[in-house]
Amino acid sequence: MGSLAGLASRLGRGPPRATFEAVTTTAEWLERYAAALGVDPPSGEELNDLLGLAGIAAHAAERTAAPVSCWLAARAGLEPGEAKKRAGELAEALAG
Image (tube, rainbow, N blue to C red; front, side):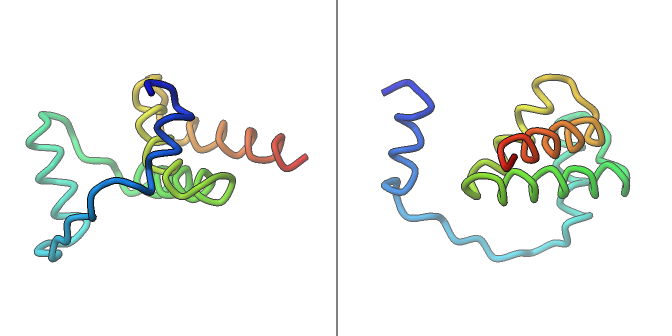
């Protein structure tokens, strides 16, 4: 199954989630991960917008929509504020 529906139907049946003990703060992780990727970490405002986008997606759909929505926004080249705005508009339209 290569479709999104197929993926969604399998999400709950994967291997057990790995357990990681947090050894760093969010800010430290984001700085280190950004450095590993060769990009700048998000500003405070960008981080708030990304968390807002994730929250909108998680409340408008299943929780797994949150990280993938952030990935889609990045793939589309959207700034976090614009991505959050568009997610809010979509959530309002779906609730409409």
